[in-house]
Length: 265
Ligand code: 1HE
Image (cartoon, rainbow, N blue to C red; front, side):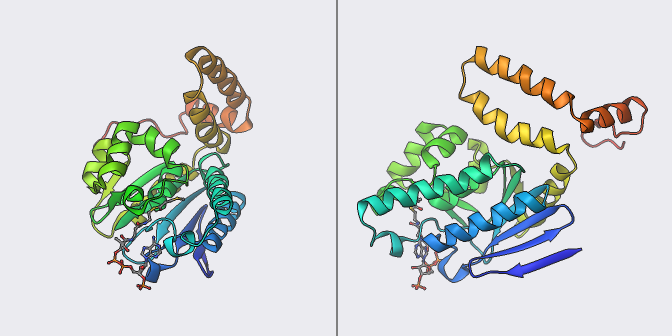
């Protein structure tokens, strides 16, 4: 059963256990204004309460052209700081929220659009997708968490190259750099992203929560602290009813096995 609603800036629908959030300002290439970022926040919050996984995609040929430059050029300094901090809070609700997010990327995935994609847990790009960080050309700086998230995905040297030179990468190049997780044919990113979201929605919800919240925190820790934290999270996961049921199902041969690529169950 699919339920769809159209807002000013985003569309929101559910399909089974997944939510599908569509950036919906195609005439401005889905450039993100202050009101737009609030609409993303509302949709993400709603998805987190209603769904087990979610997809973010862009209506029209482009995922997102980044920050709305017309609005930004008018901002006094402190307003710009607060605006950036708001993007951080909203994107943090994706990256370290309660459910996993997949982004379906096509066309421009630029500046803040790439920062939004970097806050999702899995990025699927079709063959039209291209990636750039034109902040150097615009005289500004990343402000949507890119210096942390994009730098960790592709490495600070590559990110610095993109910002310094205005280099534009296609989907294949970005996949090789680690900024894209799956490649899709032209027009195929959304369907692939939905299939991935449905797959993730079948996981135990506590495990999904632990994956998206523990992994980035452990990456910030020393090895010693990381290993200790891992043991705690691991033991907690084992205590859930879900773990007991799923482990018993496997032992009683009622659960799917891990299957080698290209083989049937
Ligand atoms: C915009 C924006 C925008 C398009 N803010 N209005 N981002 C950028 O530097 C990317 C700027 N945009 C572009 O390079 C191109 O627009 C695209 C490659 C994305 C698409 O090209 P195209 O030929 O399909 O569209 P267009 O004709 O350039 O744009 C259509 C309209 O969208 C046009 O408005 P119109 O009123 O003349 O029709 C554009 O002005 C408008 N538009 N992009 C405002 N970004 C939290 S910090 C993050 C920092 C950043 O994100 S920096 C990167 C900003």
